[in-house]
Image 1 (cartoon, rainbow over the protein chains, first blue to last red):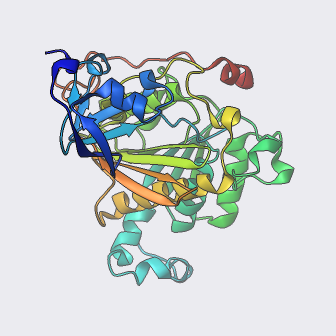
Image 2: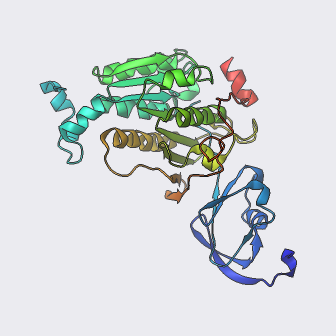
Image 3: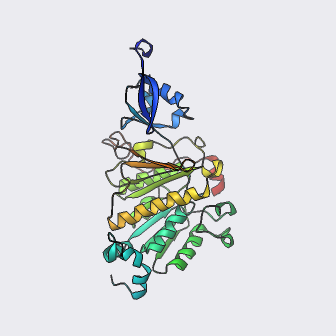
Length: 79
Length: 269
């Protein structure tokens, strides 16, 4: 069912360990945009502890009480 | 192993530590650890492991000390500018603790030398500044069944995870290197010097925990911190069954030399 046909409601979810109030269900890509993730094509996402394939960011929906973690590349160390 | 009186004195704070003791110190003294990169992370790791009396420390780095390194790479001093980093590091380790045997590799870690080098060590520490080598270390260690510590720092942040055979690996979390230049390095975006010490000492502590068998390693957990807020967080991560190197059907069976960011290649020329 297209997202805009689903009944949405305000709910609390956890994003990187912090509570966030959003209208759910919300697609992962919309949640990524809402959180101002700088390079969505670079972020690794866990939804309730399971990795989500980047190709599924548009279709996966975040629901009531879900936990989402955005994990970012960090490359430094030597130079 | 019989410790001399001087060694008992030198390592006394380990020896009186309930979980370590003489037995734990023996394990540390018999330990062989490879540090990849003698830079921001490698410097504190090397100093603390040397002070702890790790028996053999291997250091691989193909770079020379630059004046801009000294803001955070605390194993190198001003007179070391232009000296090979591995040589500069070896000199400090020898002065700090003559018990330690230092093996230096003035070279870059590549797909052709990685397995041959890591095979001699019990544990590998990733202290590199670029994604191609971070993934190379991951893949080589997974294939060789070697435990390792991944570390990354940037600006005010750091992250680290310890990987043992069978636990979530770096590729389980991050899949593949970002395209060259897509994610800035410290030389492009900067890093607060002390962040390197914060993260490097966490990695050093993981090595000592691994060697002595004390405590719970940072496995299946990615530790991240932001020094601006001083908030630390560990995010549970699971071994990914679809992981290209350690998953159920691995597609990576040979080591890969990924393309590096253009500016980094220039720096290495």
